[in-house]
Length: 219
Image 1: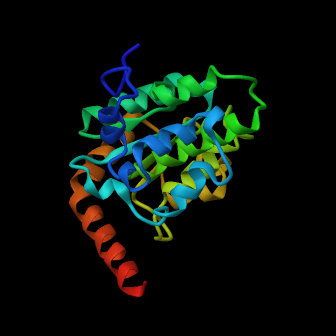
Image 2: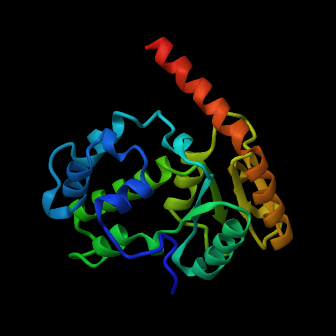
């Protein structure tokens, strides 16, 4: 299966490609603390707090979408990722992240250090994505991650243009918060959403940089 990062690597160059501002935390420190055997009090979470309110994706030339889904909807997520790439997006899909693959192979699933390391890796990916596409099917209810990821990327506007929900279900059966973004029923709708989002990308970056400047002035 193709790797959306282009290669299986955990080199410094690969990390910097995936996470533009990872140097704010320190590449070696982040990678060390992200390993369950290297996690300590505060761990990567402490470092993430230093730039949680920043928007690292503003340094990217292309928008990047986070594909949020349950494991049972993997194929639908990959289809959405393919459409996104066709329309000029970079993508993040959990199954192609080499760090998550390594972590999932380590120790028992209930291991606390492992769970925190996985959560921190997902959080870093969310911080570095400008958009999110949630895959919602009849299998999604009960997911702990999809609602969190959706809210984590959604911007401050009441109704957001940077998140969407691609679903085969009727709109009225969706959780109410999904209607704070775009609800899309067809592949054509999804493609059109990505296409418009790509056109709006310069405006999204500009607005984010203005908000970042305002935060600096307040500090």
